Length: 132
Image 1 (cartoon, rainbow, N blue to C red):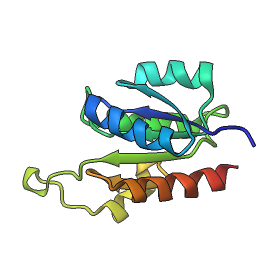
Image 2: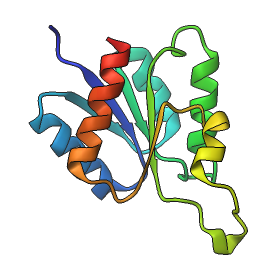
Image 3: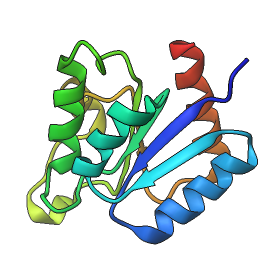
């Protein structure tokens, strides 16, 4: 069985470092980028088995737009996507729950930051099992 490749797209360098260290320790090949433009380039050249994606980067909904566009494409639509992001702030007028939003998030799993390593590994295993 070949090593599964995971692409992490997040603008937080410490999250990239910690998350990739955990996944590498458990035998995954990991690529990290800090924006969706570089993420798309990586998708074409490296063909990851799973994408871990933040929502808010340069734009408030950058991750959501990127995930939605990937799911519509023939070449990337079957790659599982795990969104790992901070929950939107209800004080800023956001009133919906994540469960209500899963229909338009274009993700297979949503995890709220901060993530526990065992939860991250569990969800990665679930998604790669689906894909494999």
